[in-house]
Length: 589
Ligand code: DQQ
Image (cartoon, rainbow, N blue to C red; front, side):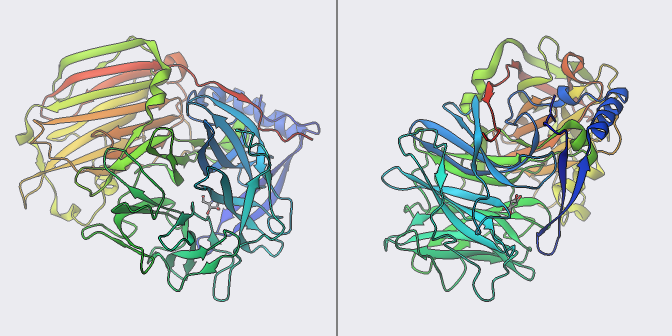
């Protein structure tokens, strides 16, 4: 399979992202032909099932390392996904923009890399960036180049042939870089330009992520001609949370009806930043003042690294784009592996993209909602299970049989039968985040209301299973319920050396008002468990590596470890077909 080169030599760049500067330091390790065969033989001997853990409908190329989605856009009937890619190995390094195209966001044709080092302004790497589609429909890409002095500079690239809807080839004008780090700017922490937007004064704007000591900044640049860019006197926004990577700034509307790019006169805006220090992202909803070119989160928004997240699991360096064909905003995010670097080298691949999600503003205006794009449902097979009104007594579980749950889409609605059984929310947890609470009370810790939910990718003896569940507490202060959504992968695999954190988020719902009901959708894809609670209010993606619960040996269960009975009002489990991913990411020589 994966690693086949003429010389059987693979250069492995081990990237160490220093917490201070996010600077990639690389050291080479060479895997000889003999080493490669030894690694593969050992893997087989130790029962590794690497190919069985590859995804069926979450995007990943056949081999090597991938990270951030880049320059996502829609052009002439085609969706474009560019992504950070190492053409030489399964660890971060040698970064280029790989490219894939699709007409339905499900099936993809891989194309050779679109942007790769060619010039002094990007000789050491082509890092993340965004696409801007001009009012006449033509696109441009702005990306971070690592120049000959290892400075991070912002470059522009234009399609070579606008009549090619696949936009296979890109040219980089000689006048690059268009934005270089000026005096006082940290040249090793100055990257990831956003999609640009035009203000009422006719000037283009974009934001670049940077830091000043511990202060993360979204610095603003303006241009009349998209070529000469000037720094604005003040940043769009800043926060005391270290380097801000991959900022994203856009207007939002309710019900997913997206009408424009930033600056289009929408009343609410979202600013998302990816925190290099924690490798989590957070966003706020707020207002953009065109006159001062600043953004202020709404009152009540937590504007710090304990703020709202798109996803409380493994989801980073995300980017949205406006899908003008269907008037919706679509979010892409990268899910890294949770196994070791040695595992990735052995597997020959690392990193997947989460399914594209539609994002829109919740009716109360306080947070975003997310849902897998409807196109994903076209993969649902005819083999599915339908369960209605089944009671799960406290301490019970049952198996959902009849579909293939290693590659599935499960939609369920649970109903708590006795909310009075909810335990009090420990006042000591007030200052804690959901993850701390869920880690303290895992899926096997019995409660009053919950834990209840799904065991996915479970082995028949239940020694391996990943729990996706809810737990409900009573808040002493206002008598309302506190709902937690958790993902507990602590028993997901019998393999050693895996990172298996409990991931969790609070779910902002009034569960009493909904008669104790709470819905859950979980996309299961071999080593991906991607869940959407309460119609997309809280989302958690987790990477797991079962050794027994693979392929047709994987099982799906409903469990209830709480005192209160829980009714499964309905549960639909669809077997998912694999997406059609064709073409080649290889660069033609
Ligand atoms: N990944 C890119 C950077 C970005 C980081 C390099 C985020 O541009 O800041 O591969 O994952």
